[in-house]
Image (tube, rainbow, N blue to C red; front, top):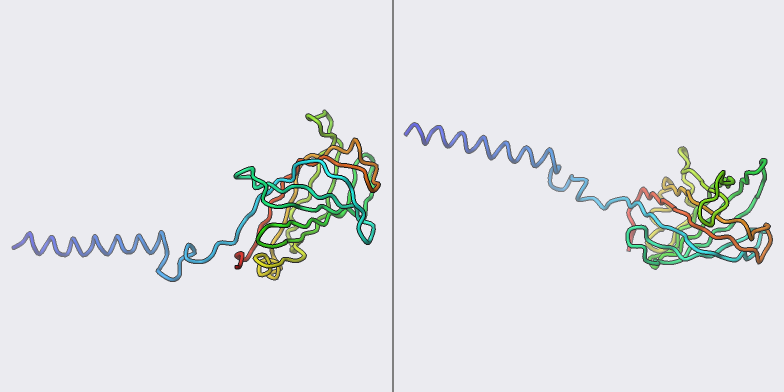
Length: 193
């Protein structure tokens, strides 16, 4: 008889402890972050050589295949448009407006980009390039289809780092740049559709 009265409270305590652990680790049903759609981070690479095409406003634009970093498969294309070019010694500063064309829609960002000469040649590249994600505003300008809600949230960011070969680029239409660039897209709202 004693064993039954001890075993029953012990079993209830064990079950209560397990339920409490589930709530702490996984959250209460209906309130779990896992139950909410995740805000995605998308990593893409722009790798290849593209020829400059002038667009309205004087920007020089380069369209390059866009690869998923996880699979290395082409998942669309991106068009990188360079404008407001300025020089600071050997360094170049410019505005880069990038249109990412995914099958699910388009996302457009703009960033202040720097291009620095490499001290030592690295394979076929002459310069490093980068545009940090802003800390106090979103640099995502617009989005369509699946990216519309994320773009409208107004808090996502895009950052860039990579290498470029400027050997054949004289800042003229028809000149080419070879790109090996990584873009990290952080969206603060889930994709839709």
